[in-house]
Length: 180
Image: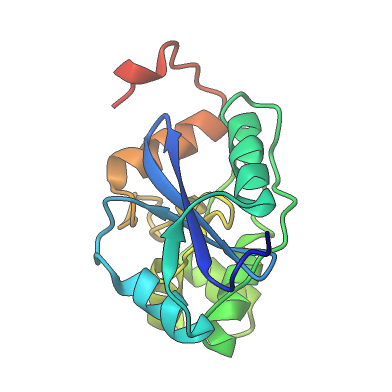
């Protein structure tokens, strides 16, 4: 049976919240928080880009993303190896690609990220692009902090961001249920 051209959405339960994984045309296009800061915005962007609707189901790509996330949450993986589809402006894509260069367990500020992409005066635009990332954790926008190293907004909430940063820095939380 041939798979129709749709965005296939699969839920994933991370220790720090519920995610939705999505794939279309052989690429991962979504790893977003089920309870997001701006409900519906990411899915609307995906549907407009692909010109298709979404449907619940799995694909090889969403299954592999779930496996790699499982590895990440058991500390067997520090980088993801998935075919990604960035859906945004060229500027946003440059920010998202730069996020992939921030090493596991480390952070960078919005200003440092702006400098890294060659746009040192575009700190606010970098922050907005970071917030529009549809591939949370996979494209590690949680590694971005304020210039004073404070935790700043995160689509999954500050508790999830705090968890991810502490996890990557080696904290052992024991039973995940009691983390947040």
